[in-house]
Length: 376
Image (cartoon, rainbow, N blue to C red):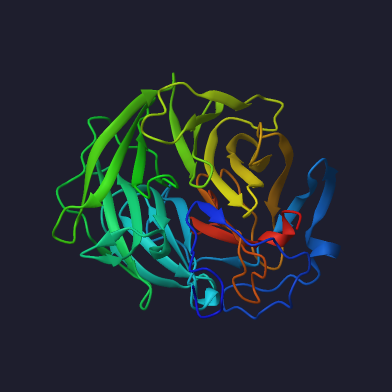
């Protein structure tokens, strides 16, 4: 348990949440972003649905400092929640032309680690029990397209800095493109899924190699017919979601013995709500097994929301528009969500999205309070 009395459970691409608050806290003054005032009045337009209210348009309250490289460099974020003080949580993000970045919740860069051409990034908290040298660590994994390997890192909670903890190189025999983590609720084992532009998917089990370094062993492979990238695993429910960019969202079993048959739960079309390319995926989960699956609908610069439970019914869509001195998002690749209170600036959690065009600067990431998007 954390000192606050909540379970010590930070968040990666899957968010294990407390119920979201329905009220906004007062805006905090942030050095890189202006508060936008009453979100219900000016920053949130909503539509009713069977599952509640999903805002049609919201604006970000924080944007990160731009990534170091120009062009299509920023790609994917992952949120780590500090179990002792959630307001000190951090965002790990990729620069496809050079490495990994760590930002605080005000968007300030805390670290730039030159580690290779990192595409997708995911993490699991120390509370999930992955150990190195007998101690639980915050595990961070990213696909390195330069070396065609899976990079493995540890995030130090005290300093919010990353260090490389990869042992023998984890080298899939496919072209490394998208990737995400899965921790089995059945066994406690941790896996990384990696996919290629030609549709292959491999699942690798990650373990301590015996010297405090992470090694991997392939345990499964399957494929879709065309290029995927974005993926996310539901640790509690045992599902693996994969975005086939021009086709839609697939749902597979996440255990290594789940086979190679999946179901297409959301199909991409020109009329939406999911417009190709299908990009980042994230899960906002509640303790009762409900919640939301969120997808980046890159073709119309929106985000489609589906129920986490059951048949993953469509709930609604939203866009991030200009507001409060921060530009909106377009052509989003990766996304992440932390559906737990993160202090006064993000009282119900945060949604983070890569922005393809950042008002003439290099690309960056936008942060939106989660209660501006999803129902409580």
